[in-house]
Length: 186
View 1: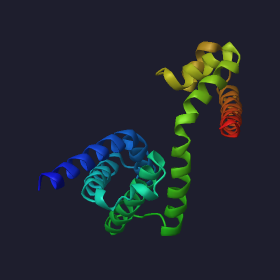
View 2 (view 1 turned 60 degrees about the vertical axis):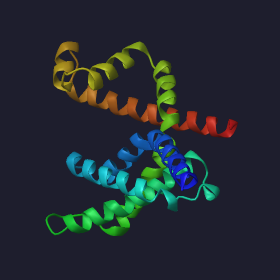
View 3 (view 1 turned 45 degrees about the vertical axis):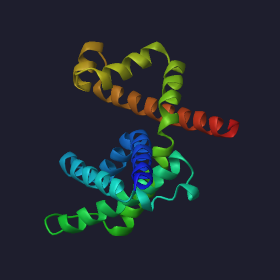
């Protein structure tokens, strides 16, 4: 009896360690499929409980470590999202099932790269000119609107929007290149 209890304690401890690592990306995955924060929170809580209850169904021998646990958790979350949307569909318009599956698949891939994206973004930001970094900072980290930034800088609103669009594309391209280089070196 003690042996069984000890094994259960070890499983629960392993679950908590693995779950802690994927908690934020899992919530992000759910939130990308259910854009209402309160609904996403509810589905996340339900998914967390089900994952804990079904930990015996997670086969560590056929997993890929942390990404295996994350994939398994996303699979459980996907079915919880589908269930939530099925029930909610009686109340409001929802995505088609095939579109939701496509979004879910793309989001999993994106989240798998999220650990690489922030360092790549930081590196790419350093490659920009100081005035471009300042514009990005004003646009995304200050409380000012683009109209206020344009007024303060003496530039046209549309020219700031155009510049921000160019910078976003440059950063996206740079981040993709950084990740590709990182994956080639791995």
